[in-house]
Length: 348
Image 1 (cartoon, rainbow, N blue to C red):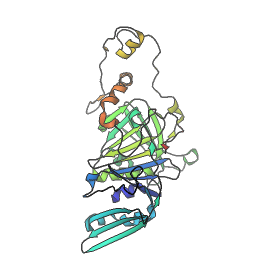
Image 2 (image 1 turned 45 degrees about the vertical axis):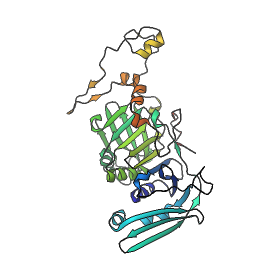
Image 3 (image 1 turned 135 degrees about the vertical axis):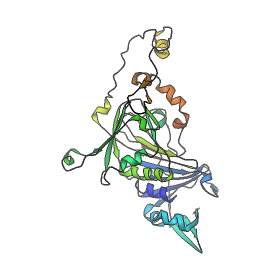
Image 4 (image 1 turned 120 degrees about the horizontal axis):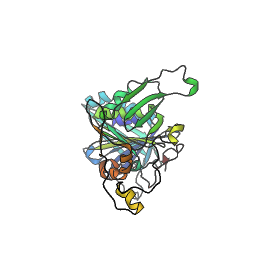
């Protein structure tokens, strides 16, 4: 729990504690509402968990806003707490508007009573199940990010079906005085690599470092969902917890026109796929080309052919149930994908 607090401190100045029947949700949003993070700890994470939604609050529950300036000093040294604290008890007193953090240590008990403000927590609205690009890797992203200086504010993520690239991003007036860092990886380095559209998105690195440190400490893989424009989502999922960070992006001018060539709107030949054949009113026939292409590499793993991959995109999303199901962190999915490059994740 302390590591989650440190990760959220990189997002905003306050956290929302939201006790739910499915677990304790801890959220944070920055002042510009361009970054959102949520950690959900399931009841199995705790030795004992009770969400008391009584006193006429069953419909909306208790949502309390606490300043991170008050919470962060309590969990200042996570390594020390892990060695000295036997049990941590978190309770919310609705009548006194207090949140109590009680540490049961050896021969001593520490109690911290913090005041809170009751208000609704913002929730990101981002349809990750409609994102054409899905990447997943375990320790890879943390190893890459460590090569960028701590002063680096923004980075650009560029992907195509055959490559993955991260590079520094600076405003034009700072290009001469800046140190540029760029790293490229082959799709074989990822546990899962699905690219439906070439993309170049720029986002804030500072707000992501907390989640990557949390994932590395717990050995959890990080999943990335994004498109040619719009927000990018980073998520981790374990047996008893999951977390998500949604970041607004600065889309490049080239991202509005993806590099993939558009398919001519012509009547398909009989040997094309079943969807095209059905639309043209001809008999469907299986494609004559192979479904995978071997890429010259040490592993020689299969990589999707772009045209065929785009044709089977909907089927792939339907098959990957684990990656497309709604997150427990209340990142609410809508039926339409955010396509505007200037529109960040919506909050409500």
